[in-house]
Length: 186
Image (cartoon, rainbow, N blue to C red; front, side):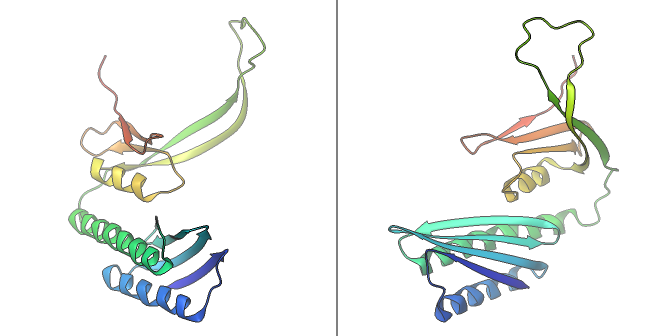
């Protein structure tokens, strides 16, 4: 496990680094596929925050905690990571050996829509600014929710629902809740 520690407005003393390494060592017992860990310790006025990004078994897991004591923040974020890793490991064990359908490839485009024109010609085609192909995995609803929760940077997850075989989407809303979009027959 490779650990990098960054300090923002805080001096990274040897006891603080040792404490972080000691706490992260306990995570290795909960989940032995942890590859890379990046820890960011930040002090802003009276708030002391610890953020951890962890690459484990092809999944990036993110957690953060903020208290008035840096050591308490480190403890809180490690507890959060430990719960997430245990939940992830349990789901991996439950689904181990489960038959998966093949995934599909989905293409999406970013279009340039001209806002200045009031009426559009019938044959109008907007310019394509960006085009990308995305792999869409076959996932159960639990796995899809977990994958979106563990991802800090993604706000939308497209997946093929394991039960129905149809394309579904999950999106993270501004209030932190998750929205599920599922097609229905017309």
